Image (cartoon, rainbow, N blue to C red; front, side, top):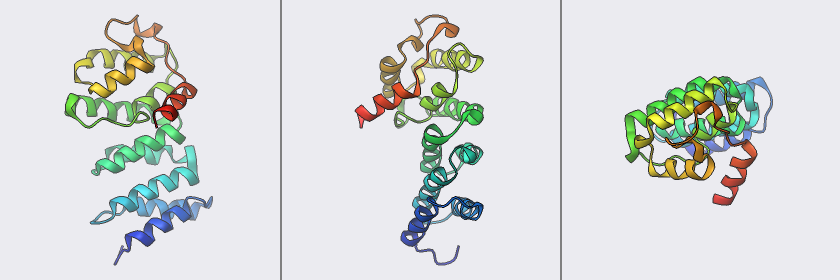
Length: 186
């Protein structure tokens, strides 16, 4: 991208977010792939616009962005996955979350409520293999979770605590519950 005007490019990304054509989706993907000074906001705007334009069809795009070198782009991708993604990215989101917890530990910056733990919860069914793995991970790494995460879990999934019932018996919160909690927190 030559002589990028970030302001105009963000506006272009937002404009493309209302488009349904494959060409618009391709242009958004090109904006997401751009790197350089001043492009972080452009990339996040393009991720959000792609979520609006393509919805769950872009789940694989958002999952791939979980390994992006730019933290804010990774977080934006995790957020849109919760909002529009389908269950196809569960393994990638779980790996991303595990890495966040294990590598950064309890002192890392708190993640907004919808990222990525909420996605994992709403895309797994209570008692499923994924739910059992997630609850097992949370219990194993309880001390590495941030204070925010432990508090959030206490209010939304208290059975996830180490002294909770067997993982297969933990009832996961629904999307409606998490959306209600998120709306009241904001």
